[in-house]
Every structure is written in C-alpha cells, then in structure tokens.
Length: 126
Image 1 (cartoon, one colour):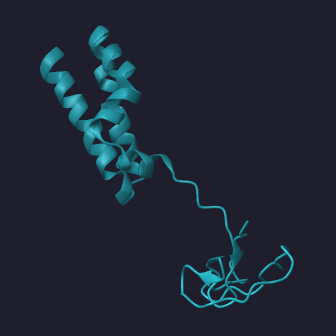
Image 2: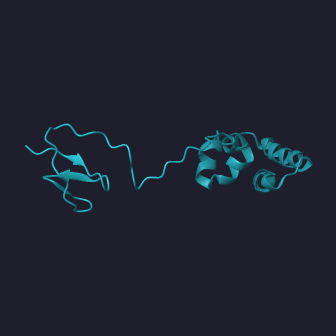
Image 3: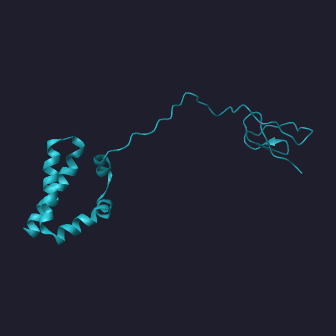
C-alpha cells in the first residue's frame, strides 16, 4: 500500500514516488514514517502582526449603514406609535433640533430623516 507524503521541494502530495504538484521524483523512504516538514517555501510568516480589537461603531455610523428595510424592521414601533398618538410626531422634530446643537457630519442623514418624519406627521395628522 502506498503512503502519501509531502514533497521536500514544494510541499505537495507525493504518491508512488512522484510529486503531484511539481512532478519531481522523490526517493522512497524505507519506513512508513515521514518526518514533518518544517520549511514551507511558498508561505511567508509574519511575526510582527499586532491584533487589535476594532473600534466600536457609534449609533450614527451604524444608522448610516442601514438600508430602508433594516430601519423599518428595527423602528416599526415608532411608526405604529406615531399613528396611534398623533402628537408623537413632534418627538422626531425635537430630536432633530437637539442633534443640531451637537452637529457632526455623520449625524446629517439622521437629522434629515427625523425632520422628514416630522414633516410627514404634520401633513398627515396635522
């Protein structure tokens, strides 16, 4: 029975004395034991990799990445409550005005959508 070993040249599989990767002939070893290969010629090992925990995204960055369906899936309760209690449409207006005091460029989309939601509430429910 033939044993599968590793090629000393490329690290490929050796069966019946030939490497399937590079095609060279490899002399058979008398015993079935094959020494583990310690040299990997096609793999570079980098020991200076520093693994850091990624920075946690704030609310506005996560909000900007969400599409319409994800927003509706997460904030459906807000729309339902706004339909049941018409005065609740003032809440997005106050939130938008409050966020204008601490303005950052990543808050612009959030503020705009809150203002749009307040305008729709005023038009529909007066």
